[in-house]
Length: 311
Image 1 (tube, one colour):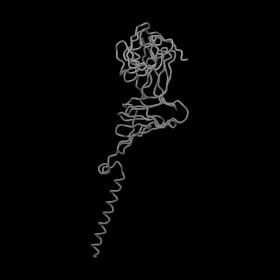
Image 2 (cartoon, rainbow, N blue to C red):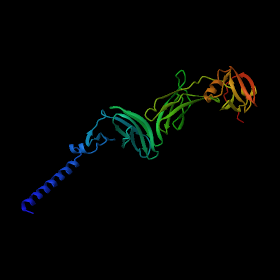
Image 3 (cartoon, rainbow, N blue to C red):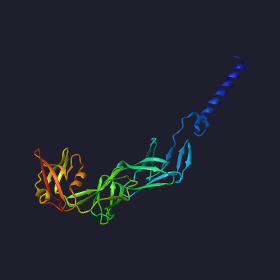
Image 4 (spheres, rainbow, N blue to C red):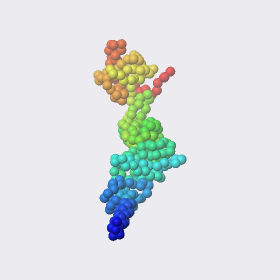
């Protein structure tokens, strides 16, 4: 090979080497035009718990006016854990100190607690400049509210069943409890002697579980004095309380109440049957009862039943 040809080949090799090195260098710079045009587009990622984010390889400083903030106070002993957020696009962000800064959208917030593991707290709609808050302890999240009657007055001593726990209202009708699940229903149960009435349930989560308003009817009510279980054909009498109108009228355990004041009881819920069977003290009640394959009629008057002798 002549000297001139050898020099040409050497020159070509050097140029190729320089070109390869240049392409490698350009590819290592994330923000280079070559990288953005050839490489896959990166999914925007939020670094929660800080005021920064990485978007398309560029670090962006965020403020609370640019993102929605989720912040939970921890009142308890031990480690508070962390918060995480799952969006509709399966983007997961996590942050420490129980604070998250999230782009606009709907997020499911999860509390990763050393005591309880991963506990869903609820959903928030992150809006720029808005802050969603909750209060946590090592046992769950705080909820609170008031039970009122139809006149708007607080009802003391009412049981409140709330998200896996039970509490009771104080003298003003207020209650404080703990949520031990994610989104869940809260309901009040008012006891009037052996009778009870329930409020409509209110669905809440950790971010709207404060200021709950429950309404119960605490108007004095009278009844029959029996326990029951709903069956296909009506309400089967399970027990007769001594000294009550049901006993005095001659009702027996095993009777099936098929009509109350002419209205069929088949298919009714427990609450609907109680509503038919209770009423104003002294009001008349007419029953149609199936006993041993025969229909019998009973009529008597409802009475207030403060307590019963259970033997």
